[in-house]
Length: 115
Ligand SMILES: [Zn+2]
Image (cartoon, rainbow, N blue to C red; front, top):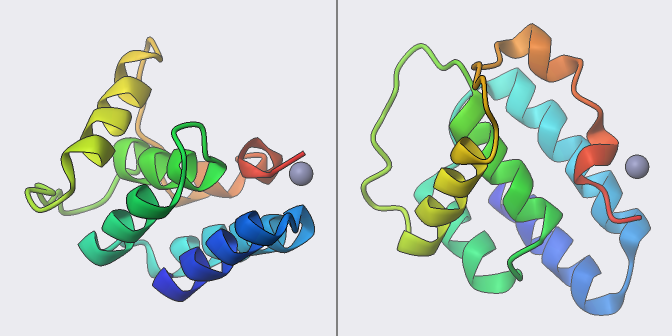
C-alpha cells in the first residue's frame, strides 16, 4: 500500500482528486483483503508528505484505531505525529467500537475522498 500512498501524494501535488479518490478506493479494498495494519514505513511516508486534514491520514488513522485485528501490535515505531492524530480520532468519537471486516466494507469510501 506504500506505492498507493505515493500515487495519492502525487495526485495531491498535481491537483488530481479523481486519481486520489481512485487510490483511496483501492487502498480500502487491499486493506480489506489483507486485513493488516499499515506498515511503519507507510505511516511515516504519509505523515511526512501530507497535511493535517489529509484524507489519506484520516484513512490510515481510522484503520489503525478502529480495526478489530486478531493481533494487536503496539506501533512503537510510528512517528509521534501519527500517533497523536490517531489519539485525536479515538477521543473525538464517543462510544468507540472496533470495526470488523464486514463493518469496514459498509463504510462510505467518500468519507476519505477529496471533494
Ligand atoms: Zn466520493
